[in-house]
Length: 60
Ligand SMILES: [Zn+2]
Image (cartoon, rainbow, N blue to C red; front, side, top):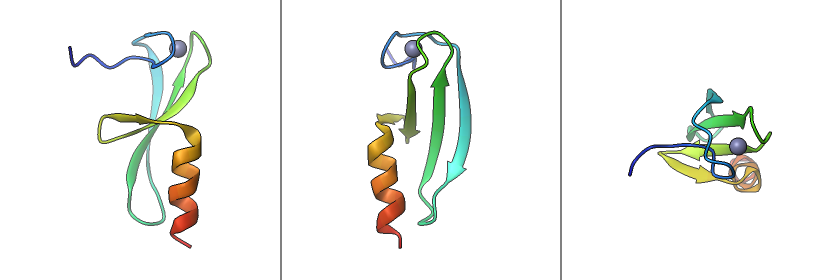
């Protein structure tokens, strides 16, 4: 199964916003309508918010 959904509730309908971090890391910000979960997707892998904040911080 390669279907991607919300890691929390499995909903397939969520907002995706593509972003590039300061170190050129491409990530997608995802926000779920159903459970209000928010997470990052990097190369098809879900990342917690903290992980991306750390990446952003490292670039400085
Ligand atoms: Zn959800």
